[in-house]
Image (cartoon, rainbow, N blue to C red; front, side, top):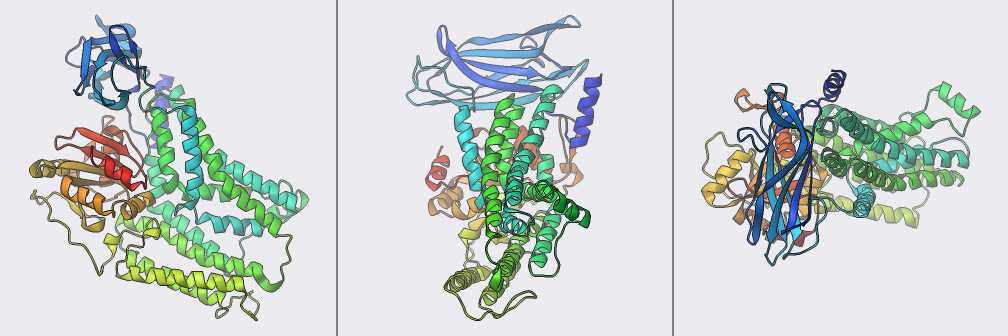
Length: 621
């Protein structure tokens, strides 16, 4: 009873619904009398039991998709902990399903299928649940066993996590923290040694803020027997108006401080403590900066975090924690180094007002980059306050003013007169005004691919000089929602409508799990979708289902969705998130899938990857 109560309290606290009642691992093993054995090992949540395959009504089912050269050998074999319930033998604890098969094809086999079950608690049974699986097995007969489905080697996973950690520095929602970090540590007080100590603590705080919460969530789900780790709370953090407006205001406050409007200082009590113990004081401010970095960067770091969460729901324990540790160390390293160097720069002479000039430049950059968070809220809630032309106009004015400041035409409160223009300053002026010139064509619809992650979508711009005319939508009922997509494409807002259109047109379905706050989605659309061959394939071969997971538009009551746990989903974003997690097993964006007109999966998932030839190959399954 206590265990059930704790699970309920945890779900209420985190906003979790009742998730899947079984966690599954998939693998293949060598077999006697066959090439391989498919092994599906399920962990049944505490308090539940499942009916075995003998119960044809609600027992476990296994379906394997036919493929050329694939031959199933015998019937599936069950292994489970038997429990008697009212005269029927049911399974509790661990349930294992084995299916032998031969494969004689010449090409590598992607084994596809679905396992279904109905979990019961006492006399109450849940709605049927299903898990789709697909993974490569190998070509020909007599081959060696493959590794567990979807699992990479630990070292490959850690290397991938490290590379993602370094790449995150260049993403639109992480890079804005670079000037804030430099400014924070430039203004620090105390010795160089104290500055270096705080820099180390800054890096440590970043690592802990990523690894500890994820580890706690994974640990609680294992200890309490739960199997669902939802992305709802992370989706709220990266797309809800409240945190995004808060982040925007924080950036504007820092910009005003850099311009000399006021100084952001710690309370006097903390300052006095810093004087008495300079090696350890001031860590509260360092922790706050690290927390700000982790929070504001989440819409870009979400994919790797989502991958870790998915692994935790599939029965892995230590691997997700190690992956998050490797990612966070690599992610924190550049910021730790940035924090180190200002401590050294403090030893340089401060004559000439160079330090104040650095702060003012950072202030202009903070204004420009802080707009991204306001734009996320604006796009998600359809306020239309910061459409693309308005966003660009602010950037053009902001960077033009920065150029005039560097020329000495604008002075702030603590600036000294600029007697001459140094070569370095002239180089910055040239770069800045060249950037302004690059931005100006965007006011007439130029794609500005290099900034696609920062800009609102091109579809939000009222006037585009060379707007491509989209192909007419399929003849569907008026209730079918169709939205404009980049490059003149159109996408259906509901998967069912896209499937109906695909069947009517004899095409396949391209499922695009995306979001208004997804910067990587915008980069994929600008850099990959814009390729002529990619566009041709999308137009000619596919109907697009554009499923926004952060769309806050309320649905009519007739379109509300009730989950298996009884949770009612009332807006487009939550319904699409539910589809992504339950049907496709993903909770990050972008993620792409290919379906036939009957909804059968042909390929996917394919996540953020700017490799255009690889994307073309993906579109040709």
